[in-house]
Length: 108
Image (cartoon, rainbow, N blue to C red):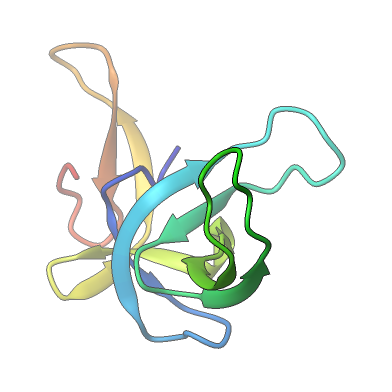
């Protein structure tokens, strides 16, 4: 994956375009009709939902707010103050794949 949990990203499209935040969760579906990878970004794409109370699990009712997932194609990685694409390269010393910035060529 080119975007991982904990990365700082900028939203490029949608109602929250221009906002930046940290990736909380990456959703990578293995099976199913919709196989697009999605990310949940902190304090971005906040939606409201009417929640019924559930006394069994001690969940209160009311209107709750939460972050909804965004498609990974609508966000870009932030390096410093600029956005960049991420690439993969094999490290010569260890032989493992590492993520690099396409703009600077540095390891992320």
